Image: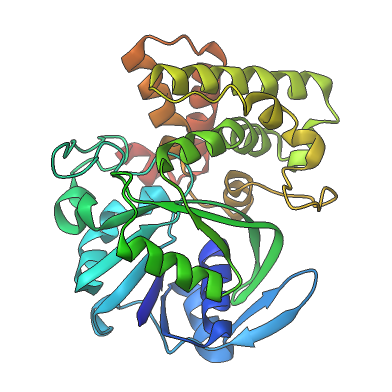
Length: 339
């Protein structure tokens, strides 16, 4: 099987390293900049609590058009970067190939529920419908992961905590391609399972992601730091309740997950027993690294759902404004003017 990891940042680097370590398939990596040069020169190194190893992809490139047709393409670049890469992603796919979009928040294919309920693009996530048109939601699998990783330096990834991968078809079926991707991940020591309702899995993670990503980005604190400020922990709990209400209005009951999500700051967001892990959510890593954040996928689209259903979310409204402002402050004047 030919497998491509499109985007070799923290999560994509961890994924690629595990797939390569398993040694069962031809694994290529699409990367750019210093990450591309480092992996090409020295390979991809993964650090964790229990091991350290270095692997070399079968190909590392910033020109996806140079790769052969792929059976599986894991898209692990940030949600805001995906539309611009839509043609390249589509061009990689073999006739029966499948894409797995590995990113936080609401995915671009959200409204697609099969041929009888084809849906429409979400403007905040796919503004020009590039992903919808070129890749097509029928060629995507949903993916929600719990896996904390960081880029230590170019070519070196640290896996911090958690290792759970939930995958599902947008229409809820148990397909052969879903089973094949689950087997691929499990063979690479990535704890993967198929779920019947991938949207509920996405909403469940958003109970944590919305408050933790935004508050950590705004305060520069790791997740556990939120519990050291009572007002922040209380704010986090209030945001969890708002997200649960928005999900309920959208048709997903998360009442059994609310208290678990509220406890996340005290656990450091670790779900695998490593409560001492100082987890820095992706938005915080992006702020510290001077990169753009997944603002619309994690926050903006959730707010849009609230607006569509008339669900009050005063705390989320403030967060969206603050995080969009934070994003704007990090841009160059030229880039900010284009917003």
